[in-house]
Amino acid sequence: MTLAMKYLFAFVLSALVVSTAGAQIRKLSLQEVVQLSREQSIASKQATTQKKTNYWQYRSFQADYKPQLALTGILPGFTRSYIQVVQPDGSVSFQHVSNNNSTLNLQLSQSIAMTGGKVYVQQQMQRFDDFARDDTRYNGIPFEIGIQQPLFQFNPLKWDRRIQPLKYREGNQQFIQSLEQVALDATGYYFDLLVTQVNLQIAEKNRSNNDTLFKIAKHKLELGKISQNDLLQLQMGLLTAQKDLASAQQSAAVASLKLKMFMSSRDERELELEIPLEAEQFDVNAQVALDEAFANRSASIAFGRKLLEAERDVQFAKKDNGLNATLNATFGLSNQGNLPRDVYVSPQDREFVELQLTLPIMTWGRNKARTEVAKANQEFARQSVEQDKLTFEQEIFTQVTLLQMLQKQVKLTKLADGIAADRYQIAKERFILSDLSVTDLGIATQEKDIARRDYILALRDYWQSYYSLRLLTLYDFERNQKISY
Image (cartoon, rainbow, N blue to C red; front, side):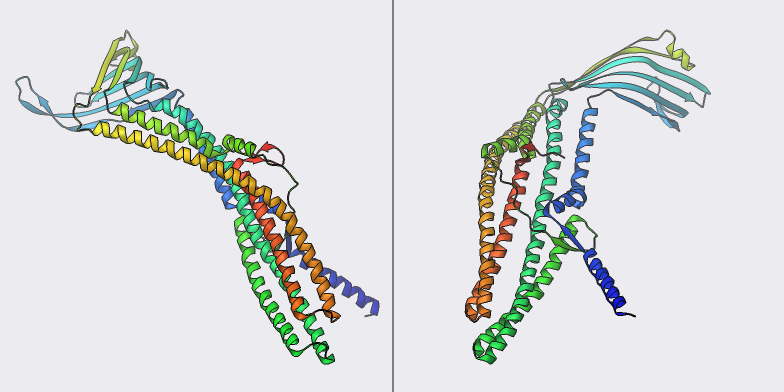
């Protein structure tokens, strides 16, 4: 093989190695991790499932207020037995019976939300087969209209009409909150990994620098420019850097696994995270944040729902303790015959009116106790809602103030990080030129590492505060619009 061919082969081989190594690393930004978590994490899928459940529960509630068509019946109703029959003289005779008594009923009903009652229209056909006498008879109701109306009773339909729409809105907003919570959690996992990766970079750099400085120091010792103690101090620094590197590698591997698990990612490539910049400067008005929070948050809707539910329970206790009555009334046509068509030939009037009453007379204070318990629970609900509102407002104001403070802190720590890096570089060069002690070099190294970590931690606090404010208000202050999905 010629020399040119050897160089070409080496060049191709090195290119393949670099390409393969690059394919094993997946670079991600904070925004990409947040988006992936919203799309494929288990938490986001659970939020979507809960939203579907909320939707179908509301559809079920709406269906209760629409006409219902139902077919009911008994097919067959066969009986073969001896039954007791009272004779005219008062004696009892046991007669053998063998029959089939089948019934079909088709009913169209409509609930009345304002009164809690129900009106209905129905048809009914009954067939009776007497097998012992070989006889078949039909009885039917060609047409009947009726009403079932509770009187002086609690009306659940009326209260559901006020409460269920709030639950539906609350569930929809909870879905948005869940996705924002996913973003906040993803940010936490992102920076947990980013901090370990920065620590790993620092450890790798420190090990390399300490190794280089230790070699230079051994040469200086031979020239008599440093003491044996300084050399031992540099050697200890090298050993510490090697130990820190091993620890940082383990921490990075664990944090990477946790982030992948949260994102539900099966990608086996190593993650390399970008250091995110702070968002563009934007002002957050505390009053606007509070107004948006009360307009958008599910907790704000829950405040009104809880008060309504407490009021509903008081009304139920009052109504359940007094006079309860139910009016049942029907009017229609009925007939009987040997054939089904006979039922529809000259049917006769059919009327039915019934009033059922229940009036507690002596309950030994039970009814009053139930009412007082409901009233006490209502008062407790009011107090809880007031406390929750105060806590809610405090969280908003605190988060707005924190975000504004962190915006400034990120800029300061970034500036300090740059200064510390420059100072370390100068200290390193001075040590090589024998113009700086080992102690001063160690101090510069520590300051560089601390400044770097402080900058990353400040970024973490900033972005977590940023997504926390979005979660608390469900409002995007960068775009000045409500958050929706």
